[in-house]
Image (cartoon, rainbow, N blue to C red; front, side, top):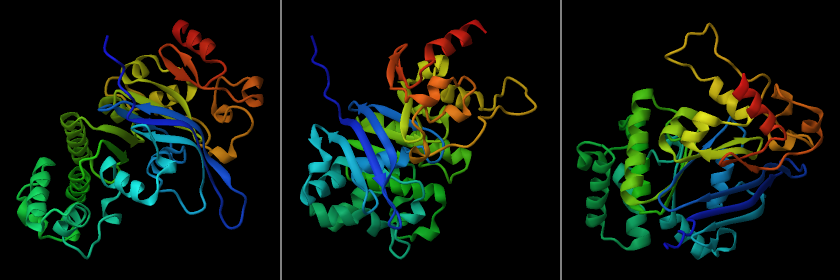
Length: 332
């Protein structure tokens, strides 16, 4: 019998609290539990403020000053919070790579693309500059940039947003990480370029056997790219299951609302369905279910007691009434 593969990433009971202006720290993440296998793609989906980006920043220990971190994050069995500065630097240099939302905010506009791509190879790994430039050109070609030698001599302002995002992906791939954290990498791009960038990320992930956590507002995109999807709301995971099952048998009222609000090319409707109310942050949530004020299935117990994330139909769901709601949906 083949032994089970050890997780690449394990997040257990993760909490993050932030304070501002002398105020007491307030929760922004509350009890996140996730695992990621080597080579697996996991999607994190939810509205703005749900805690998606803060989750991956906790994985890299790139949290705001004064942040209070609880629970544990383990990468290949090592506790990230316990890493000393040298171990943390090595972890960030070659263990995990992050593709940010806006490449223009993370690439120095005064330096050439070649300098941006080769700096870590030359400084941290001692790779000769000529060899580093050759490797950078090879990776630029891998991510679909033509004439890569010429691109190395250009400045960021000479490249389009889509090309700069490819440069950002190339910079991550040059470090040969085992885990990629993609934080809404296609937000600022048009639909055609979005598809190309996501296709590049997914292809290279599979070819190189890297794990990937993919953050997006686009549920359809997450379902297409990732094997599993975790849906977040108010700093907590409310549902997690295999992508095909989530598309076919979503169970949490919030997930059902997200699925129902998507436009369809098959059905005609005068207006798109929408989830009423506004999303709340973890620190705004009351003692019960954070989604209670927006939920059509709310009952008194939902406001009185916080639901736990519990197994349901092959996934996990955080809802007191999930069995009743699923039965109602099936018989409707």
